[in-house]
Image 1: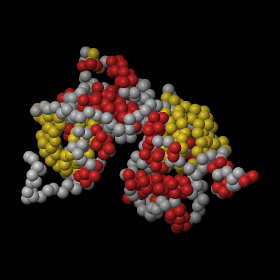
Image 2: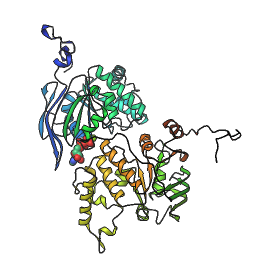
Image 3: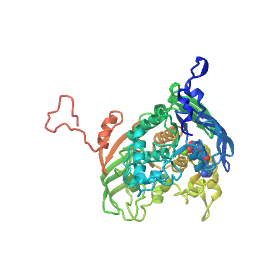
Image 4: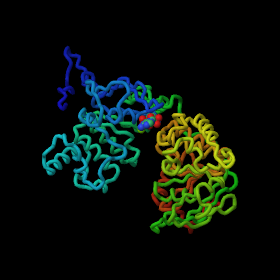
Length: 548
Ligand code: ADP
Ligand code: MG
């Protein structure tokens, strides 16, 4: 109900003058919400309330139950138990329409916009009972422009959605919710698709909305975002609510501890590398895609036992192509040239023997960047995925057949060792959260004891508890003398794990750096394709410099 009885400046009787937030009922109150999916208790007696006109964060590891809870609030799922109060009134939310009527809007992570419609068309699409039913498109455009201006969400109403950046598409999603009179907005991991400046812009928009009296629920697993953007925060762990805190009086370390259930190292600890002999050597690797575009341009590198070579770069500068050549995952139509040797022996770059399985047999494990399409078969169970690429491992052979029971037992053990949740090996891979899917792939590849491990984006979409764990395992593998090639778009990750850093730009290696003596600024320049200023060759060397 708009208007809300002027609660913002309601002064209490008797000169007590309580703040508005005391007199207003909470915008949202959850009481004892529970929800199970088969054996998985995704939400377990969750209760908290969110004061009106605040930004409330919900943080928790992958699989903690955040999205389930928000789906219940938006009428996608029905709770098995519990009660929801919206502005103090018990409210049934059997479907999204009821949620929209109750003033709850969802900003989807995977946008549900129609790409070849304009912004205006997308916003008014399906809002039959919006306030502007029957008005002309022109007046709708004026109203949309006014709405956008009011909340600092400037987008061109006539632009085609397909021409907008991801950040702008997200603004359209927010506008769409506001158009439907939402005064409570849910954003589930909204920055996963944004660059850092876009994320900062989003937070400014959210603060503006809050200052106009809207209530925001911001789901994220990033501590920095909670600290920066929220007023209060609820922490979830394994389906339960473990605490609701005021952001101003908590710290990232405290939140991390609540999320994970123990103290978490937010910094990586590692001993200096003790590099051994060169195991893998690539010379002049080139890849032309099916359209004849050169994606990889004469890349050469060496990888030694006992070291982590980090490949830094903005996504799309040839890192994926490099991994696909090394891991034997090039696609038909791609042309590859150059030379690749493993312990001095040539490896085929295309055709027979250049597939993932042959590479694994040769001792090159691979955690692919795209775990959902290349790392796992999502419809297969966890245990079937454990054997993927290794199905003729002698440990699992029984005559000519595969010993499925042995694989199942092995998967059950891996699920314990690697803390994969839920530890149910008969569950399809798609039923696990991103972090747990990643652990399934990592457990499979790391435990095969490869000499060389290719690791692409190991912690993408993974929460801090799992990040700490994965980072420790990568370092442990290095310390066992394995050679590790790490590709990541997270510069922090590259800086903290690598023993050497190579930076890729436009299909080339722009330069190589020692993380101990370089800076993020220096790496950032290489990532942008800017080669460092060289000392001109003619400059006479100083007395101590320029040792060969
Ligand atoms: P979060 O958003 O915190 O990562 P989710 O709410 O997505 O967590 O998931 C909580 C738990 O519920 C996870 O174990 C997940 O595998 C399970 N889960 C979520 N949705 C479904 C579903 N539709 N079917 C079966 N299990 C599900
Ligand atoms: Mg989620």
